[in-house]
Length: 475
Image (tube, rainbow, N blue to C red; front, top):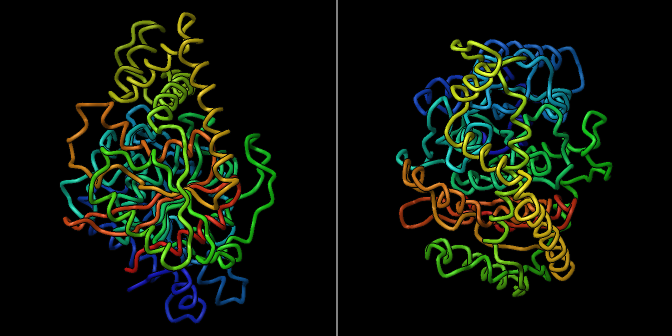
């Protein structure tokens, strides 16, 4: 069953050339066939088939199909579905079942989407390679000895491997976009507040945003439109009107398009093939009528430094709730209350999570708050001002998604700083809260994917997706 887009699937479903149950069973069979890839933590075998049958019944009885009727979706395992495990790929939440649905889940299900299961990830979304999961690693779809990116590596691999048509991820500093670049798919992080965070397990609350991974921009636009909008359960969600993203995409033309190209995104250390493929695509757009505008932006290294101070500070606060007392893992070796807290967190959290909790606690401590945390907030404001200024002059800011192609499993686990630099080009958009995405633009000499990273002004997701559609490589 070859399905290149949801439009293709929808027409076949509504004409009853195929049923939802047949589609779901096709995807479940593929998931079972790829079990060794460790892409899913939990698979909804029975639930997905039951929902598919209910939707088939609805269509036969003349019910109005929703906008996502029969769309088979995967969901990152840090987003809540009532009655299903939400593990965050951590021992400390290994057997915990959610008692409520995320707002994004409710909105997707109200339009007849079908969830196939929960995907693997870096523990508590802390990682850039999907190697920190307590449930094991996920291989890259193009080379099993390489990583799929992180932290939404399972969701990206699910879409790239044909184990879901669209997947939800979460993006704090690049966790949707970087794995999308490594897996040759589209990965969208909307404007901060565009999608409700209610039901998304918090890593860094002022950065976290649910995002979309898909094979094409049209599917991403449709899913975004369903999820977007104000939610009374999330005070940080925006009241900004939800666009008709498909219509906005159609308004974009390459003729006269102003593409900002920052020097900071093309340092000497950038992989030569990545640089060549990205610059080649930009030059191709210039030949088709776009204008390339060289712009000055703060060095991305400053964004990385500020980002890891701010997100570790927020993580140390957010993860304090996992103490073995109320829910989740509790250590068996707990002689008193203090020992229970210490042992439960020691045994339940992985190495990377512990590292970030310790860093966050340090930068928030009385002697270092002004030196680190306050200064990082000031740097964040500088980035916001400079990016606003740049996007007043150009339509979009473009550069590579990652400074290198997918790297080998184990290559960077021994050097946390080197691992953090995998997100050097995606972090600035998270610092400022602007919408950004990765779109596949080419393959290197080893047949590894290269992604283009694009940033637009606040709430310009339709324009962003339209520009990305102009750039996407032919499959």
